[in-house]
Amino acid sequence: MNENHEQLHNQILYQAKEHRKSEARLIDLLQKADSKRLYLHRGHSSLFRYVCDELGYSEAMTSNLITVARKAREIPALKEEIRQGNLSVSKLRKVCPVIDQKNQEQWIAAVKTSNARELEQKVAAVKIDHTPRESLRAVAKNTSRLSIDICEESREKLERLKDLLSSKEGRDCSLQEVLDFALETTIDRHDPIRKAERASKRKEKKDRSGNRVQEQQSEVKKATAVCHVTRKRSKRKSLAKRLIHKISMRDKGRCTFVSEDGKWCTQTRWLHIHHKKEVSLGGEDSLDNLTTLCSAHHKLIHRE
Image 1: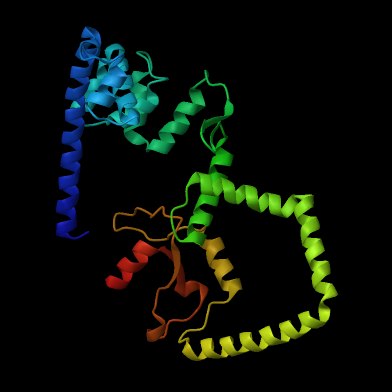
Image 2: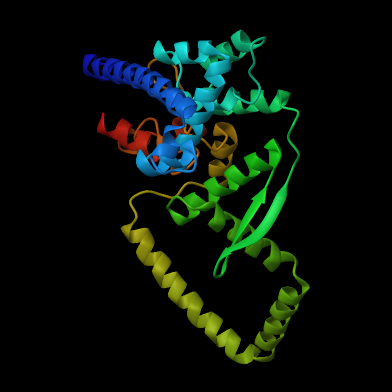
């Protein structure tokens, strides 16, 4: 990491710490507003609506602030950690359902040493008051809301499917698109009606076999011509599918870039196969010379 990068990194750390200190001051004021019921005097039915509607915070951020502010009355150490710039409101919010005066040191340490997802898993492992629920209800014209609780294995599958579909489409796909894709693919493969429709179409094609053969011959000629032109224009031979499969298995479908301080890139989308030694410099299409990079790190390496 060069000097400019280090300076920028330190500036960001400083501002993040200052932001947390301002969160602590805001929590102080929200605690006073809550005890004095300021929101009622401002024409709001709750502190939540006051913070959302009058202060302009998102519902998610409002929920975080109010939950931590109220929990900090029971455990003042939470507010002190925020005031010192050590912890953020958003991470502390995750442990509010399980933290108490007896285990506060344990959970504060966990917030400091865990990322958001690890923290969610630790809380879920000890949280005992959760009952799995699911609901499907109409919320607008032609729109329904699906709400379900899923296990960690299903969550990983869902995230993997989202990665695959996003890479296929070349954009970040929504969970609704992922669900539609999964439903359509499954129905198309297993629905007996769809199977019957495909069988009927195959029979119709077979009945028109004479015309079909002529059409196939014509298509073969066109494909041959296209392949011939493609080979002439292409400067590099495509990688063998077997080799691509080996690279995917080895790199686990993720970027292999490692920063100077030893941090691995976690990107699992927009992946490219990169030649460590360029082909123009004699690099081979071999497993040892090929690696997986996300598009951002692929561009970074080529720029450098």
